[in-house]
Length: 388
Image 1 (cartoon, rainbow, N blue to C red):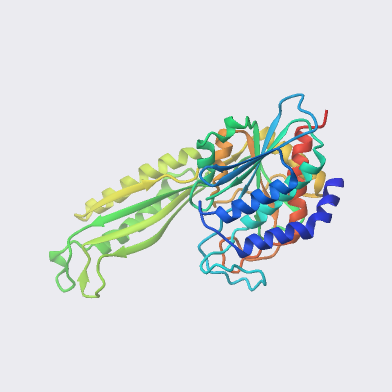
Image 2: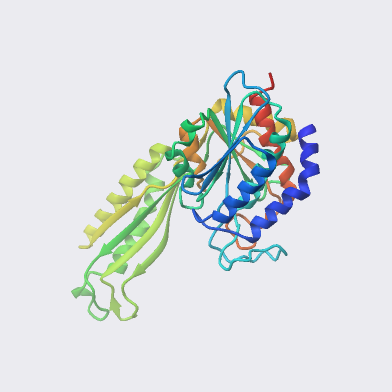
């Protein structure tokens, strides 16, 4: 394939960009050096427009095709931020910043989109406009929402939007996608249980908050097994349990629980919140305690639209013989969901081979995945906006 051949030629260059970014990770919206690096490369490529500061520190670039007879505009997105993790990969280009690491491959995503940008700037073999979206703060900061809220879709007239994410465990050279829900929503809750502190020798004079909070944890897990339709996916996890006591002979006055609820069905988010509140409050009340629930909505479900998923599949099949068109949905969340709520589009998984999972300190992005990722982005633009 011509596209794949060109990216094979560019492979070493793109790998160099990726490893530079890997060695200099930045978190959330504080991606100033990364955004500057992206802008420098885009200027070298001769793109038509570069606009920084979208969604605080995001970068949007425009590449116009040879013609624009139909006014088509396609958006391509990559995330730029790293994670607060101490790297343990052992690679010779490891993070130079203590406590920060590209443990999710966003350095790879950014470099792949830069590679596609260089190719599209060279060839411009399409009829329309490609808008390249370099996003901050995917890792918990909702940078995708910030860019949408900044008017990005309307300002550049984006009609469809596409993105990718590397997938450890999926062989390099493969692409996986499905229409409909692909990644889960992720909401957070905090429950503060208040009882009556006391001496461990006199539990009858206290309301044992540790006992009450333990009952709340057990009861919360009945929500999925007894309130959720068995064919729908909901995951509830209580991740922390802390009391205000540090002594073995003290009955704590308060206990604090924190957790998440993930689902592939937007309706289940409402049900889960209602049940978490009711179960926590009523369970605590049964023991003479109180429970205060704070619910924090997180990323929505990532939902691929039907037609655009088919376009993503066709582009993938044009550049790879290994395409899974019905990959199972998974329960991590992704803030590309906000862009898919704003415009139709699709998100795909790009094989990253046999490495530690994302968010692990030993995670390694496989640079052999770069040419296919670049090819898919470029093929999408050329297929969705064929040259006049």
